[in-house]
Length: 453
Ligand code: GBH
Image (cartoon, rainbow, N blue to C red; front, side):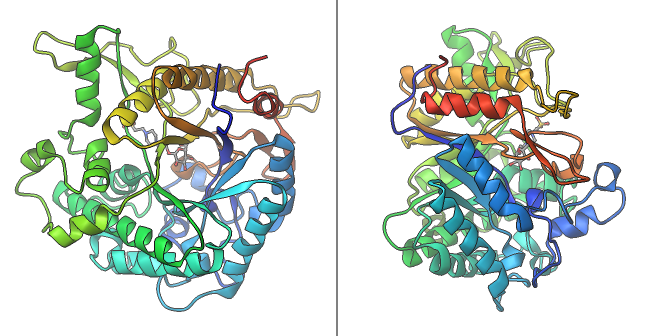
């Protein structure tokens, strides 16, 4: 495997999944507090009240990151820790937490890559409609301004929002994630538009208030069609499916990424969703299409498709990747070609450098009798995906970095603590951290800049 010399080796996490301290030092509630504290929403009614207690143990966690040798750590900020009501009053204790964390990371030689919003909307703003409210762009811009003024002298890499289709698709449409709504497709298209406007407003705020040049993006994700063979027809069909805008579910990547890159929604979606679209003004599109500096993309799994006689992509039966192997989450098939094609196709379409802001494997890891956590499947998974990234780079894709999800086992949203993605095992009774075999493997791989031996 070959990677450029300046390749960014990283690991990631998100505020609600690790911090805990949900009601300490002035933090306001977020939609995920309300959702997970409502019985029946999350696996065995787990919640993020304590999580990995990272709020209190961040020094220990940064020491582990330093030992791992990552160049960058992707974290997210809890909006309601910084602004308990989402707007207005600022909670100094919340800002101070991130201020110190960022200094700690920099002192350890680790660049902080900050995501402004990873799903934990302040509950006070959800009560005003959340992304259904057109004022979201102003609220999010004001929050981004507060953050930029405090952290923007040291943070150089930003993502505005994590995974729009999960927020709107799973949170507003299917209701399986917070805020647990079951909106119509029409309402979801409105939420999507307001989300994109909020993104644009945050980009403006970061540009205006950070010191020095910034690298700004938004973390996209999608479902990944993989061409069943290298035949042109299969590749074209899979690509058309990837960028197509036909689904009423929210996984149409181009619907999210094209407006930012090109200042307009894809024609195919405008046609298919006609009659359900919100009012879209030129000023909206100008706001949404503020230039960004790179593409961040979260890539986990995929499904094989082949072209039928009409050239359309049809699913290949059982085409989920490497045999029937999966992580403990049913959607997590092992499909390294997903990351290969995502890298190539996004480079071609958007002509920006790509950073894989998440990729990882979950299992039922546990501390074995020898005191270690043996996780060969995770090592195999990451090897296969990095090999695919390396092949994509050789074939012309512009990939600048890779962030393993996640540094720690953590609160896996509606799945609670059952599925473990970490390089570091967390005992949720004692909060003891145990680096897994994959931690040491990744450490050595980083030291060799990705060469296998
Ligand atoms: C990421 O989301 C999140 O950013 C992170 O917080 C989370 O912990 C991590 O992944 C692990 O889950 O094929 O229709 O069933 C991943 C988003 C959304 C990817 C659902 C898989 C399956 C869609 N996932 N998707 S479907």
